[in-house]
Image 1 (tube, rainbow, N blue to C red):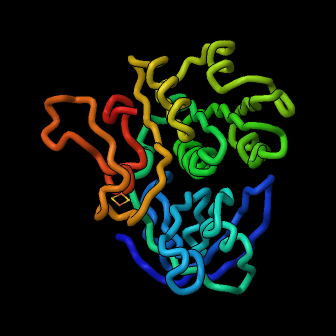
Image 2: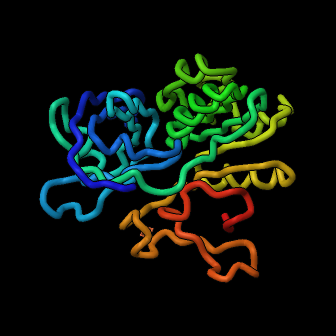
Length: 258
Ligand code: FES
């Protein structure tokens, strides 16, 4: 069930260029059901800027009601957020959306692919899969060395391949280059990142069970404004569209047109 309330900042730090790790404490954490759900944070004083910002959840500590969020500063709102400090409060609405399904038989293999700011939600997903005795393989892509984050954390959970567009960290290339080279054998694929990357993965694995988390600018975040709709692929689908904020952000490959 979604809640709205003040969450206390436990800590905040810049972990890569313009990438911030914000740790928050509050009751809302108990409501998070799946990795891949997100929260909508109020940014700025008063009504400026007017909108909340969707921020992904990277890790949950249910017992202590703590969640770790990671976001990139992209404008006035997120820059304001990045200046908030330990002990201050943020107004948070969430958890929102439908996340990644984690039910899988133990011993199966999951391939997790993240691009840039799409990487954080995969961390909680990987932890939960590991707790179910699922073998995890990570492929993480970043633009350049200064934008790389969380690599050690992922390496602790399973084998991790890292690529950067310019080759300044890890291998040079895109996540799809790693897939070509390694030819992984896996049972299910999860991905989060820019749409061209998701599209390439959907095309590459038409026979596989693939879950994709879409990145989109959002307004209301709760399915009320229609700012985030995507048409469905299936022409027989009565509604003809899905809302990324409330039907997604995670969809099975083939459900919406990317
Ligand atoms: Fe308003 Fe999705 S952001 S319906």
